[in-house]
Image (cartoon, rainbow, N blue to C red; front, side, top):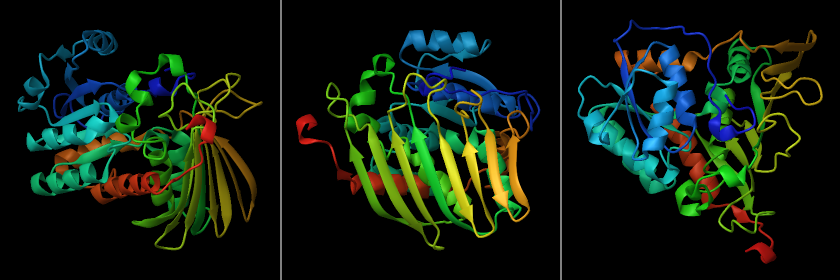
Length: 362
């Protein structure tokens, strides 16, 4: 896993299967974003059998097959979709193509697991909601900054156990390194990537809903800008938003593409969670000036000040829960309502954002 490039963020750990070999068959379609490796790692480690891969780019397929020996290269997406053994399709398509691909996968009687952001328009979301209801198939999203980060998983467990009381506010910081020269063309096209709040902002909104226990929220304010990238006029390199949940909890988050080269990882992602009886800070990917490792958890409660480095101690339960949800038609990993609501709110934040781009860069 590359710690310098967030596009290739693909955590892995020792296998902990929840099913027997051959009991849950998956395939990968669309290798446009490197997150497909994290998605497949999580599922395979939880016991899924990765049978097929397809992408129109043979070089991407060759690299994928080198990572997952024994997987078969399909001649087309249809070859995978028409295979009755395949139960779930994982995909990391260009963001604007994720919704339509999910519609197609569900129409073929398979569950769908897509990279974030799952949609770039509200019309795509509406179509997916209708298809999921019609087919009773899952449209799940890889919100990796919570699902594939052990400190984030640990914080959820702490909150569930009442460690800081009732959650009142969640503050999220999601800086990323741009690495512009290594990015594909679609990354810089607004119609393709959806905007910064729609894209990496989706992580932050999903975490707010989860940690605060909200099923719905309102976007109060949001802003975007291209402050420093005149060569890429459609890129938004900064965004922030404020939300209020139905239960009164609030959120502020900031996302940006300004990680300096001196940082040892792709972004100093942090989450601060305030409760009625304490607070938690997650230093997800680095503890700057102290340790170039991730998963540092700091918290304060009525008994004192605490710290734990949870890397390698918590695991990633989402993937095994998702497999069992697909087999048993349950919703323990993530409810469909939650996945869609996080997507809806990031689209709304993007749509109503005030653009602060300096006139000279517009």
